[in-house]
Image 1 (tube, rainbow, N blue to C red):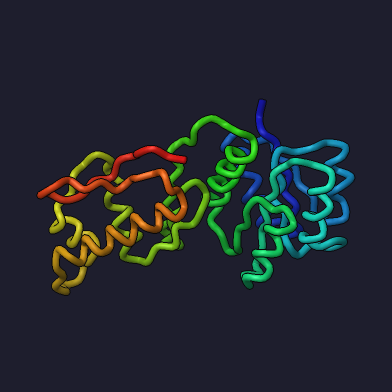
Image 2: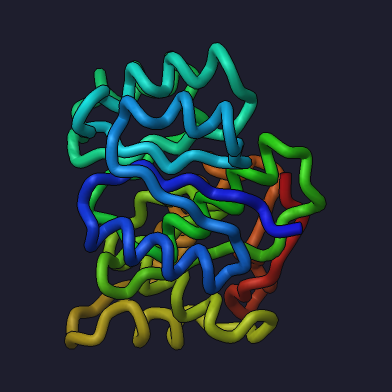
Length: 225
């Protein structure tokens, strides 16, 4: 049975894009445009996850989130263009399971939805859900943004494109720096170290960048939380 997603978004273009992507990934999707419609709709129909915009007519998303937490165990992902830290923290303290900042990649939203549903519904072990968004130079793992620099993103993209292949440091330098600057092996090692830390911050028990002694590095899925 398909998992049910409720999109609460008053902008038609955004809602249509999200609906189309979620439908393509096998979800059952409904949509509301007003915050003051959500509680009654959830009582009558229910959903596994609510994609909840912050700025809504009728009732704002934070108030809706707080009310939903009194009546349902459905996962809640806040969607907002307001990126101030207080909004993020307040949304999570009120019971949201995650938040996504506009503008976003629809693929990132799908990855986040899948990751939140796995966490909140005790799903089976995660599929390999690394998402690389070239348009925004953004990488997400399990739906969470890794926060990579442009060079770190390029490094990960090169390695992930051919899992299991061992790349020498020289090959990685050529891929990471397409200009004529001179960099050392230590520069590659430094970027790999930073990339590993960012992966560990998101998924502490997962290792995806492996060292091959005397040769270089390779991408390979390790254990994941």
